[in-house]
Length: 102
Image: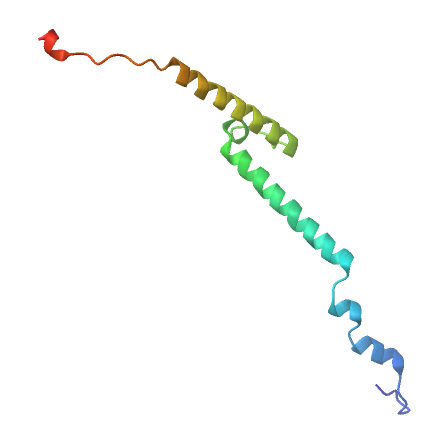
């Protein structure tokens, strides 16, 4: 780049040419981007849990992440306990011979 006199002005040349930093992101920027993607995925899964678990989806107020995880764990414990109880209560009754009742 030349100034009015016709000599080369390096200040403008530096502005016009992309630096190495603008061409390739730094390691810190790469790590920050990866960390943000990890946080976004985690938040997405926590939100999905909040929509699947009745104790959280029926809540009128917005719950924090720890509350969603705590209520999800409680719901799963209750669900497993009830399932085991139901299996224990099932009794095998002998088949009834309906011809006797006629």
